[in-house]
Image (cartoon, rainbow over all chains, first blue to last red):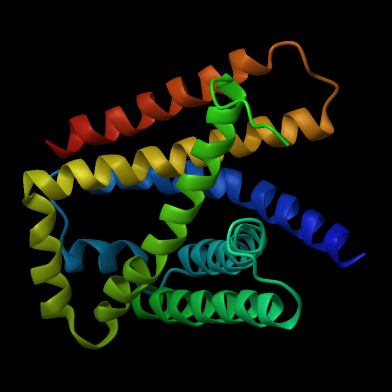
Length: 109
Length: 112
């Protein structure tokens, strides 16, 4: 049951992220023209509810997706199991979410 | 179980896994650099000047490729699992790599 729920969460977070990734790459190709500056990035993102929600949902989805993906790899290649595996996966997800939320807040608040 | 590493779909599997690991390792650095915007904009700017280095541009190309190939590889996987497709699997795997090269190539051409 846990495996099935993790499988579904992995696929659903992937489906949510597919359009985000396409937009993210598009913005990168557009944004790097003429070099990158903090002012340019903040000018686009600061105070924008759209980018706050876009990157906010992106961070939530990627934290779940990376934690489950690495959990699978740690199990298959790292031999981790049981509580150690679950604690590690939750830790990875929590750290990514905390750092990601901090970054989103830094560029949109 | 014997693994056939010469099979194109084994390569698709390993590319998906390795790109996923690399992206997961890159994310904390990515988030940390962006969070500098909050309380150390000058440091963020000095970090961003690094993006003018040719080596960093090549690394960025690599990251965009990893992101694109992980997305297309993932879509291929979802299509295989959830849609009634099977015969053209290799074509889809090749298309995933070709599409990713196209996207990261476009990025690279804009960067240089």
